[in-house]
Image 1: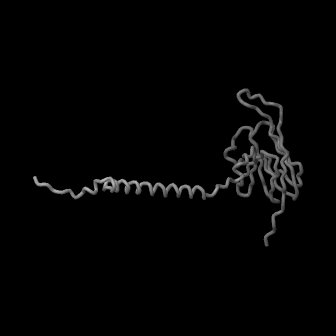
Image 2: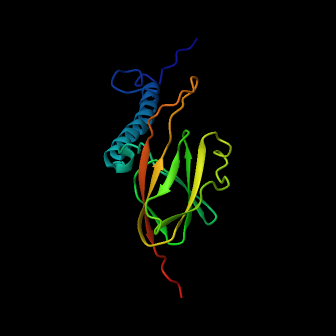
Image 3: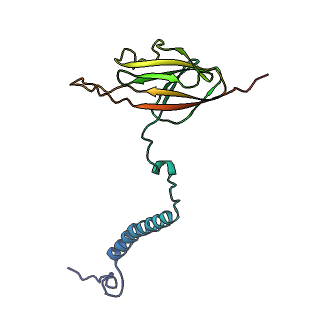
Length: 184
């Protein structure tokens, strides 16, 4: 065999990098550069993101009780639960519905403002129709001012004993009657 001189002696020396070292340097740079840019972008976006605004209504507790108001055509149906004032226009017919116990009744303290129309009107709230011991009373706002309804929720007769307590719970409910603006 004949002797041939090697031409890659310089590449094997410790002073120069070979093709393997360059390849690893390229792979490392192609991995580290995007990771570094992503980390910097994350830090910048996190540091500059807006602080969310929490509405104060989300922090306040929900009301314990509230009146239920339903409009059925021209008739306003109210299931009272609080002593808060209700505003209604002059001439408005409204129905008070109760779902409690025997002995319940609703009376007007001032018939010049709130007059009773029908003590037991036809049922308008399907979920309460046919419920034992439920009651409805229809009133009409006949005069301006504040009128009061005295609402007696009756006695409690809890099952299974069915024994009724003699305690009546009541509520005085104010209704502010206002005149509607005249349209010309």
